[in-house]
Length: 221
Image (cartoon, rainbow, N blue to C red; front, side):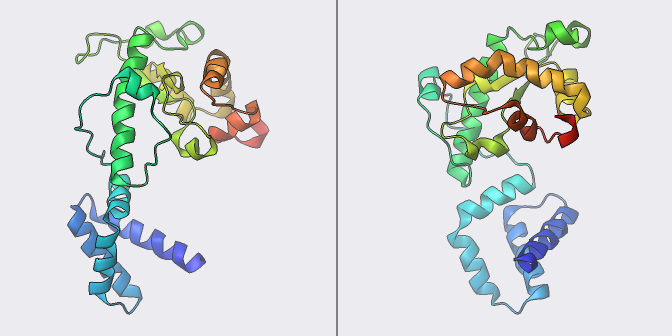
């Protein structure tokens, strides 16, 4: 297991050093890097990758931060509300998740009237500027429950109440500030959205679990 993890890290780092390359170039490079360490039949490895293309394309998209194709038309609100838990581990699931997310982001902005949820406590008026694309306050959309923890919930977290509009300053602060400077912000959002999330079947068991989502040091809790 340790050897396999070390090999994955080795290949990932080698791919990162190559910069952004095409999917076919990525597959060829993986086979070559694998061959540097083990005696392999390159034809069989390529065949295996081809048979599992959805999985490898998903990994490729994540590695190079490439969004899956969402050119499938806009979803209606009813379709969003009826959406089940999405499995983003293949190309179709990833594309569907991005498609749902695009609609929810726009709905969240419109619902907030392009204002930060922390506007009153953080005096966000000083940080607003007008978006050229939308001619509204520029706001960013934040997953309150991060996607990496989606599997911990029985119901999908891709719901409107989990999409939070923040001014750029608050968004950066929630992600990058030291724990004692962002704790009150996270708790304020929690207090505003807890009941709404629970109506959608999303239960955060306690505040300590919430702080784990944001990778707090234990001493900060």
